[in-house]
Image 1 (cartoon, rainbow, N blue to C red):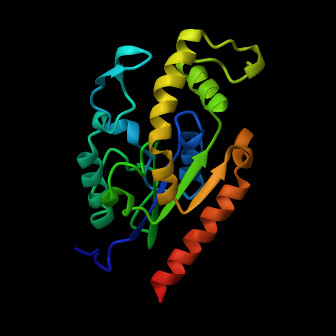
Image 2: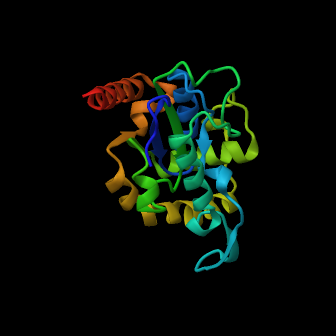
Length: 221
C-alpha cells in the first residue's frame, strides 16, 4: 500500500525515554515548532488496564509500567491510517491547521516504551530520538506531576515522601531499566538531560530540522 501523489507525505518522529525525563514537554513544543496538523500522539492514550504483579520489594501491586497495559494494535492502526489516509480525520487532527496545503506533514509520537513494544512499531518512525535523564531528575518530575506542584516552587523546597520514592525507584525506574538498552539500540540519537534542561531546545530543534531536510531531500531524488 502506498500513498497517492495527491496525498501529503507523512514523516513520523518518535520520542522515547523514562517517565519524567521531559519528553512530553519537548514533544508538545515540537508539534508547534513544526506546525504539525496533528496534536501530539501520546503512548499513554493507549493505556487500557493495569497489570497485577508480585513485586519482590513492594509486594502484590498494580503496575502501569508493563507493555501489557497498552493496546499496541490500536496505535499501529492509527499510524497506518495517518500514513496512508492523512486527510481522514482522527481525534488528533487540529481544526486550525490544514493538511491539504502541505506536501509533507510531521507527526510526533512519544512514550516511555515506544521503541520496546514491537519492531513493526519502531520501524514506522522516520526519526527516533531518546531522552536520557537521571533517576533523581525523573523521580522529582514524576512527583511534581503527581502532586500538581506549581512550577514556581523550586525542587529544593520539595520533600518526596518515602512511599513515593520506594514506588518510583523499585517499580517505575526498575521497569524502565529493563528495556533501556533495547530502546537506546533502536534510537538514532540520544539527548542527555543537560542538553535540554530548562527547556533549552535549540540543539534538539536543530537536529530535527536537519534530519527532516535530509529525509525530504532524499525523497525528492
